[in-house]
Structure formats: C-alpha cells, structure tokens
Amino acid sequence: MGAWDPSLIFVMAGAVIIGLGGFYIASQRTTTFFGSALHLPARRDINQPLIIGSLIFGAGWGIAGFCPGPAIVALGAGHLKAAVFLIAMLVGMEICERLRLHKKPV
Figure 1 (cartoon, rainbow, N blue to C red):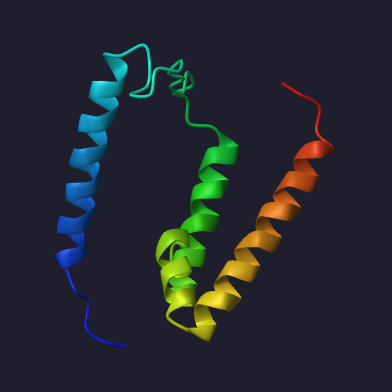
Figure 2: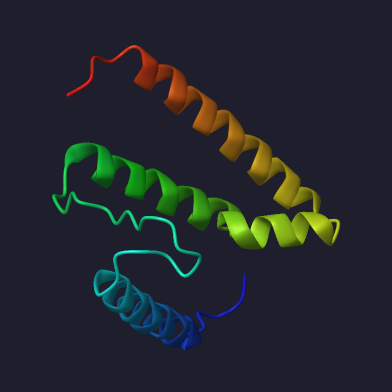
C-alpha cells in the first residue's frame, strides 16, 4: 500500500462540477439531444435504502479498489482482481433484484 494521494480530491471535484453543469443544462430542456422525452429523477429524499446502498458501494470500492467502470477496463487489461470484483458485483445486483421482487410497491 502506498501513501494516500490527495489528487483524487481534484478528480472528484472536477466530476461534481461537470455533473452539476450537466444537470443544470438538462433541467433547462424538455427533450434529449436526440429528440425523445427527457426524464430526470423526481425524488430528492435521502432514505434508508439510499444510505445502505451507498455504504455497500463505498465498502466494495474500498475493499476491491475498483468502481464498476474502471473494473471493466481493468478486466480488459487482464487483471484477475477485476474479474472477481465484477462477479461479486453482479451477484450482489441479482440478490438485490430478488429481494426487491418480494417487497410490495410503495
């Protein structure tokens, strides 16, 4: 393990700024760039499933050292660790989907 690299803060700040700009532009539009209806998230509440999901995502990222996009790239580069991460992620997604099927709609 190497020393902590604070440059990731700048990556995150850049991503947040670009994301905010993108959502601002999208909020001013009613259609996508290809002409279909634009559907933005309507819910803005922070609820228990969101917090639990965020904690699980963060723990997986911290343990494996990957988030989903870069894991796919790492898999293409032949990293076995990425394959293990992606399999675990897909299994987790399937478990979540099966648990969701047993709940009544809110």
